Amino acid sequence: MENDDFPPPLKVGIAYNLKKSPAGGACDMEAEYDSYETIAAIKNVFESAGLYTALLEADSDFTEKVKKSGVDIVFNIAEGTNGRGREAQVPAILSFLGIPCTGSDETTLAVSLDKAMTKRYLSTFGVTTPNYQYVEKPDFVLDKTLRFPLIVKPDSEGSSKGIADFAVADGEKQLFEIVRRDFEVYGEPMLIEEYITGREFTVGVIGNGGGISVFEPMEICYLSKERENRIYNFRVKKDYKKYVTYKCLSDAGSALRGNLKDTAVKIYRALKCRDFSRIDFRVSDGGTVYFIEINPLPGLAPGYSDYPMLASLCGVDYRTLLLSVLNSSLSRYGMEPVAVERGEAQ
Ligand SMILES: Nc1ncnc2c1ncn2[C@@H]1O[C@H](COP(=O)(O)OP(=O)(O)O)[C@@H](O)[C@H]1O
Ligand SMILES: [Mg+2]
Image (cartoon, rainbow, N blue to C red):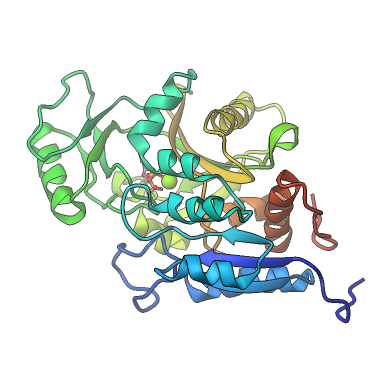
C-alpha cells in the first residue's frame, strides 16, 4: 500500500564516488568506485519505498553539499579519495557534522582498510589468519619462517587491486620481482601472506547488537585447476561466469558452516562494525578457517557485487537488502524504520 500523495518525512542522501573512466576499462585503478548504474539502482530502491533521495558525490564540495541538502541520513557507499584512511573520510565528515550515516564509523573503516593492522588486531581475539610479513620498501629481508607459496597484495587496497595473475610466488626470486613491480604501480606498503590453497568463502553479516544476523556462507567455487584462475582477482571477477560459480553453504549439519558464521560474527563485533559487512575466508585442505580480509563497506553493484549476490542466494532480494541495511542504521539512531513490504523472502 503506497500513497505517493503524502510526502514522506525521510530524506536519504546517497554518498558515492563515481568511476570516471569509460565503463569496462581493463585497469583496476578505479575498481573500488561505483558506476552510475549502481547509484541509480540504490536511488530506485529508496524511491520505491517512498523516500526522498539526494545524490551526494563525495568530491571536494561534499561538506557544503551535504550541509545544504537537509538529509536525515546518508546511505554511504563512498570509497573516499586519497590515502590509507580514504574509506573513513565520508563517515568522519558526517560524524563531525552530526549527520547520521549508514555503515561502520570512521575508526572501523580506517582500521579495516589496512589489512595487516586488521590481521594483527584480530589475532588478539584468537582469529586465525595466514602468517604474513608487512613490507614498506622493495628491498626487505624476508622472514624465513614464512612458507611458500606466498601471495603479495597492497596492504590498503580493495576490490582485488594489485592482486594480479602473478601475485603468488613459489620462491624468493619470484617474490622479490612481484614486490618490486607492485611498489612501482602502487607505491605503498605490501602484505606478503602465506597462500592458503583450499576453499574460499565470503560471509555477509547484517544488523547491530542483539539483532546481528549472518547470511549463509557463500562459496566461491573455482572452475579451473590452475592457481592463477583460483584467485578472486579483478580479471576473474570481471569474467566471473567463466571462472567461478557461487554456492551457499546452507547444510544445517555442517560444522564448517557454523564455524564460518561464528567467526564472522566474532570479527564483526571485535571491529565494532555497524549495520553490515562482508568477510572473506579461505579454508585449508586440513579444515582450518583463515580470515583473509573484511569489507565493512562492501560493494553493492546489483548482479555483480558479492554482497547482493550472497543475499540473493539466501532469498533476499536487492531491495530488501538495502532497506534492511538502512533500517539497521535508522534503529541505531533511534529513528523510525521504513516499511520493507515486498521481497521479504527469507
Ligand atoms: N592468503 C591467501 N591465500 C589464498 N588466497 C588469497 C590469500 N589472500 C588473498 N587471496 C585471494 O585473493 C583474493 C583477493 O584478496 P583479498 O585480500 O580479499 O583482497 P581484496 O580487498 O582485493 O578483495 C581473495 O578473494 C583470494 O581469492
Ligand atoms: Mg576480498
